[in-house]
Length: 338
Image 1: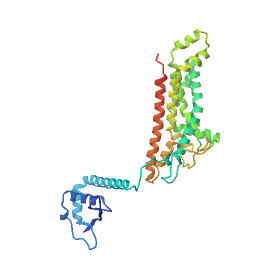
Image 2: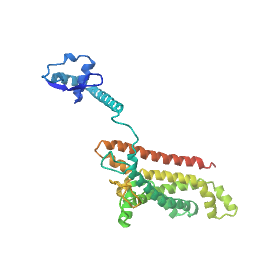
Image 3: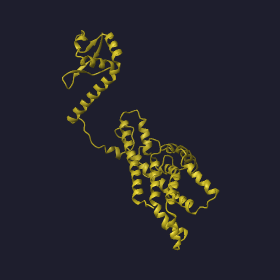
Image 4: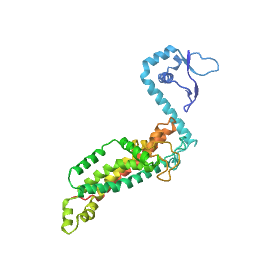
């Protein structure tokens, strides 16, 4: 004879167990559903309350009804937890409110105190460095290759290499940044400055390609009309072609920045996937970024970091969707139809 359940009063005035085994609970529920409790109640020791049955009965039940055990245990536990949560809310033992601390504090080993402010500031600083380093160089390279560069083998080789760089895995740029920015130039490790420069190298081919496509989409008649009225080649490009190509250039740049915001692999080589408590105050301070923060929290064994990981993922997706929506808005708002 073995004891299965110890009881306490529940919402319905019935006795339910404090400590449950999946097979035992399923057996109990199955007997309750069939209203056949008396058939398996046995003599129990004095001064105890519990449900007793033969081991052979349990083995037979498990063999015949193992497929419904998971359904029984999950349904029972979720129902009981829902009742407890509702009871605690009604008695004001717990309350639901917006977690301001999550957006106003840095990382912590304690899940209740951990926040994403440090990661948000680090991502912002890294993106500022990225756009300052990549946007002017990318746009000027696109203008030169599309409007002024002679068509020869050298320019063809450059164009092929730019297209190939756009398909290179991001971890390769991380290795390049590790060798150049950290080992050669000695930039601070785990800083937005080093991470932003690596992201600039990664997004530069995307900006060049999208800018060339935008410039090429301007009809040749615009250039011919400007030059026919006495404008030089430089004036026709910068006064007439570039203003018409700006929406496409900005769209490609924003999409490149959105890709940089979601990257983790190149920053791993720069030391930005690290536990950083303080919120960075400048581009040379140690910091992390949102994707790296999500990765670090997802690897924590404490249960509270699961909710932190989900919340940080929603924040990152919100930033990405906002940037892509803004790029689409610019394209449809200012794009000229020819």
